[in-house]
Each structure stands twice: as C-alpha cells, then as structure tokens.
Image (tube, rainbow over all chains, first blue to last red; front, side, top):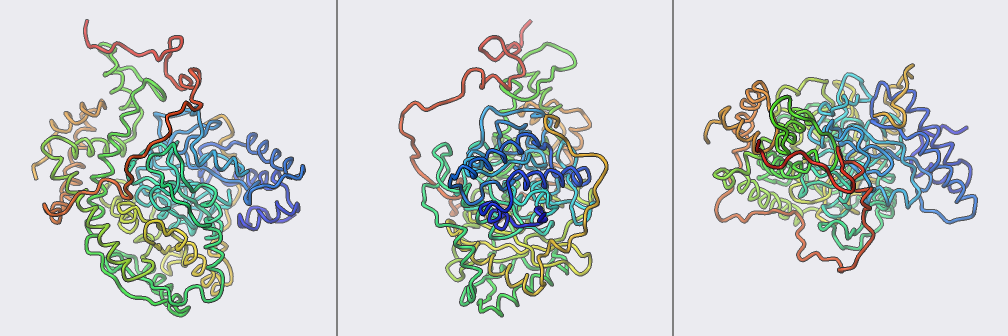
Length: 515
Length: 98
C-alpha cells in the first residue's frame, strides 16, 4: 500500500478522487501513526478516533454514490484547540475549560466538515494562545519532531508538530502575533496568517480580537492554499469579516509553479528584521534564499521600516489589554470550571476569583494583570493610547514599503528551535522571540512562513516570512510556491524528508473522550 | 514611569477577579516592573500628531438583516454550565451580605 502519511494533501486528494485510496485507509494510517508517535510528540490533546473513521466512511460512501465532492474531501486534518468543535473538547490549552464541549462549531470547522475534510482531533497550544513554545499549555508541552528536547514554537506548536511529524497532512492554526508562522519556522512546515478579516473568527476562543486570525498549517504552499480556499471568505457571524470576493489561493499557488513566476517581482528585505540578534545560520539561509530569488529574476532591495522596533512593545500592551477584557468571560457561570474559595462567604465575586486563580496558568495571569494595568485610569493614555499610535506608525511603514515593492521578506524567527526551559524564566526574552511576526498582526497584513533550509550550526529548520499588502494573500501563495519549488529542486527533496525518523513508543496517545 | 508595587498588583488582581497568593503577587510585581519598563518605549514615538489605530482593517456599520435565525436551545446553552437550576444558570449569592 502507498505510504499515505507522507503524501501532500494535494496528492492524497488526487488519490482519493480517483478511487485508488479510500478516506478510511488514509484516516486510519494517520490515526495509527498518531498512536505510534504522539506519546513522544504530544501534538494532540484529543484524538477523535471513532468520529474520524465514521466521517471518513461517510465521505467514502458519498463518493461511491457518485456524488461530486470538494477537492480536499476525505483528507484528514488536525484542529487547534482554540477552535470550538461541537463533538470534541475545546480547552484552548487551559484548565479552566478542561473537558468543555462547545454547543456549536466554529465557522471554519463547519466549513471543513462541509468540504468533507476529516477532523482527527485537537492540537496542543500555549494556554489561550499566550506563548511561543507550548510550554504554557496546562496539559504539558508539545515536543519538536526534529529534536524532542526542543520547543515546537507557539502558540500553535501542536498543529505545526502534527504536520511535521506526519500525524496529519493539514492543520488549522490561529495567529495573534506569530502563532502560525513561528511554529512553522522551527518545525520546517508552512503556515499562513491571512489578511485580518479574511477568515472568520466566529468560534475561535478570543485572545486579542483586533489581532487574531485563523489560518492554514501544512507541509507545502499548495496544500496551505487549498485549505485557505476552504476556510476563507465572508462570515456574517463575525462583524470583522471582510465582505470581499477572494481569488482562488490554489490557482495563485499553481501560478507560482510556472516558469518565470518570480521574474520582475520586487522583493523588499526589511532592514530592521535582519540584523543583530539573528542566529548566524538563520541569516545564512536567509541570504541564500535571497540569492535564489535574485537568480530567478526577482528584484531584491532593502527597505526600512523604522517603527518596527516599537512593535513588540506596542503588541505587549494591546494584546494584554484586549486579553484581559476577553478573558473576563471565564466567570464560572456559563461554562468551564467552578472552584469555591477555601473559606469565607460564597459570593459570585469570590467564587469567580477563586476559579480564575485555580483555572488560569502563570502566563495568563501575568498578561491579564498587565492588561488591567495598561487600561487603568491614569495609565491608559501613556500605555494603551501610545501603543495604538505605534500601530498607526507601523501601518504607515508598511504602506511606504509596499509603494516600492510587491512583497516584504524577513527570517520567520530570529533563532531556530530553542530548548525547553531556556526562555521560560524571562518573559521579555520569550516576547522578543516574536519580533519578526508581530508587525503583520498590528497592521492586519497577510504573512506566510515557509522552510528555507537547516541552520548549519544545529541542523534545525529555518523559515522565511513573506508579507503582502492587506487583501493580497494570493501574492503570498504565488511567491511562496515559486520559492519552495526552487529550493526543493536544489535540495532534491522536501526539507521535512530530512527530519529524523520518530520511533514508535509503547504507550498510545490520548484516546477519544479523555483529555 | 512610576514603580510598580505589590499593593498595586494586589489591587489589579482584585479588579481582574483573580485570587493571587502572596508569592504570586511578589513574582508578578517583579515581572510587571520589567515588562512595563520595556514596553514604555512606545511613548518615544507616540506624539500628539499621530492618530490612534484600534482596528487593522476598519469596517463601518456592519449589520445583518433583522431576521430570526436558528440559535442555541436552552439545553445547548446550559450544556457547559458548572451548575444549573432547571432552565437557568445557578450562581452563588450576588451580594456580599450575611
């Protein structure tokens, strides 16, 4: 039988469509691999074995009945635990939502099901998406398939590890300050943060509502594009959803595979995101990628974005402020945990405070307190107000840059995957890890991360980030597919085929019904 | 910028409705001081002539047609409640009185 877990989603979709493979076979192959490796990797918080096989069988039956199905019908997918799923627990990596099964599906999950994709389970993440390593998950970290002693990135380390460990060909992520792109960088996978408003946030457990975007996680640019086409588009249930008619991202990616796709494309290298503090092997692979782009006819120039140096500061005021407000909904009344205080009268306010103490982890408490401070009377103008002005300056930097170039590039992350515990004791060190990815969220522009090689000093993946003007997501797919094709032609294989094989463990992953 | 004190963090914790232990307050006081020192940098460029941006891709007057659509049943809405009483959420006393 074909090695089903190592196929791209596009290839697997082709085999499903022509009947040479059934969705049950493909789904079972992935579930077996999850059983074999996920005790070590811990990408999943919940594996929906029976439901996945039932969904796969239903797709196979519809196909056998002659029904015309969507392009990715029958392809398995992993779903970040930040997304509401009516048939699986949705915890956002937090104790406060342990075991919670939402009464509805997020819009993107509904769209997946309607397109016939097969949900395999829910992936691990930093609690409420606050983190860059998954070390802030209440359920323990996910381990990087390239080196189990290192972080898989965050917050969406579970989704990135799931695709790079071949546990799923596709996954959904969410990106508030890099939670899709940074995990992609450190695991050698592909991830896209769409234009703000391009993909519905309805049913995504909110972290910072003006920054959050749901997007695709995959092993190839074309696969990400195909998934983007499934989840994108206007949703009347999300008041920030753009009413635009979007072009086909799949067609945009295919256009990138044509010869000459990069000829004359103006590529801007962001001066402020390519200097000190970037690991030498990251810079080396980034410079090599620029040379490859130039060799294919792209016009490379350096552009300055002087206000990007204020982006991390602005972000760590805006995000905690919005998060402190969004997380007020965890009040021990409507859903989630309820804990009574150890002594004293039982009032709603005291029960709420005891519940939030027991249910939130240290990083969530830190950011809620920080956000409460930033919004306090007397400090609001100096902190939150100033941060919103920086947001304007960063948008102006993007506008000025995009008046000269078609796309902007930078390394996706300053370093390769770091070791567990390395940045846990120093919150600012962890926050500065997002320096490359945060500007896109502040400005609402789309960004893609894709692998460009291994750093010579540690043999770990390096990613390149490409950004386009708001609403020009298709440009990312054309550019990304073209660069990926050139790199793979040079390597003679995909980057992930160089990842060390994972040895099956004796214990099996969490089974259905037990988080 | 002013120093952040443990009393201030305890007050913020009360505003945010999180019971924090004295150890957590001490830790967060140090963390917050460090983080605020760093992020205060935003005031360097946030001059009065720069307008604030609250929304990255602004939309105005987003309305849906005023028609009834399917919504959660009472059972669905109560399905995640820590405690219920018939068709209602059951909560502890709202007022702090003896």
